[in-house]
Length: 566
Image 1: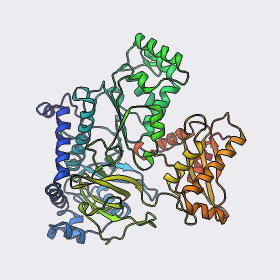
Image 2 (image 1 turned 135 degrees about the horizontal axis):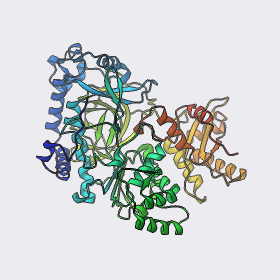
Image 3 (image 1 turned 90 degrees about the vertical axis):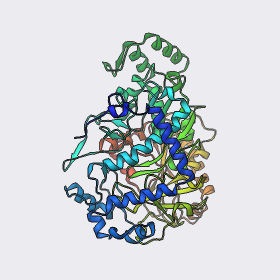
């Protein structure tokens, strides 16, 4: 059983530097790494070999005689998770020394392309030496922005993870998502000052919207300066809950309750309740985050690929507030860590693993890479080019075909500055039209210009037929009429043809039918996300996409009985 530790009670932590000093020192090391990554990269490779040589995997691949990166590449083929799954299942069955010398203490659960969940082995060695250190480094950047005095539970809302009271078990191992972990594993792990804050604690049974409201309520009256999350949709959701439930929150601030009940961390504050009530009386659209936290100055979230298309929503709900990127972090490992104020890309985290890259082809359908594919090292990448990632980390996923694409935006010292471009092959193409999320987003935004209200939530869904075509599901204003919906659909269709010549050609030749509109009631996508969460999806896995790979979402909409207009 993992015993929790806290920043306040850990004797090891008390003997070392303060939390702020630790984050700033980690950031300084990360910046130094950018200028001379060679020695660190060599140490990482030797550490991976040390973890793997004496294992079943190491013996099967002859790693006892491997000492260099070139030998490593020859000895170990590139594999997808499905090809690595048998090794992981042997670990889950209790077999020792399968992938790593350090034994797994838990498994991180995430979604898999085959429909089966992926279980990522987690060892104390990987957690403390790599992942924990990476988190400290990225928080050093945020410490620089708001000041060391404000890295406290009163000044930060950290939405990037939650402490859960317990974890599920699989074959005796704790299993949980990376964003919902129960405890730290040691003094080198990520242990922030808000580790014991009531607002950080999560409940697997709690509705997503209620979880966001509870955090708002518990931090009402706090001097929040920084909000951190992974997906920007969570910040938008936070703002929407405040606008929607403002009167309820004002009442509860006056009473000292949370969701109608007394709760730890919630106190009555009649003065704040009166101030918020006056603001609410003059703003029918509802309270804003800056009404609750006037000194909110920095937001941190992913800001590339599909997440980058949330900029309009973020600017609408948090106007004038600075945005910084979260590290490019997946369940399997950290790929980039921000070290400056670039809004969407950071340098490769060369101290987190061994990273290789395969040039991305235009016709890449997202299928597995060739096990013997030639790979490039980080110093060989070219600015403006995009690459598939092959990653080896000390959790035992060696030469792992991640399936992600990164674009090089320049360099930070000797390391490439990488922006996450999305999943390889993510998009839709019935007849060669190659529709992407960027195409759909730009078309909807173009069609919406001049319309009333903010850009609605939407997604484009491929729909099979003779001929096939696309359905645009949109959260629609119930006050609109049929003519307005028809005009909007025509405008999106025209904009799609304008930004994607292949789509235009397929439409002209009737190989694709005209775009169809599926108008949904407001908050429908929130209901879809909540349904995913109830089925066991973790917060990091619930990502809104502007285009779908298949028509599964149409079935989900039908099964949920979401109200339609039209």
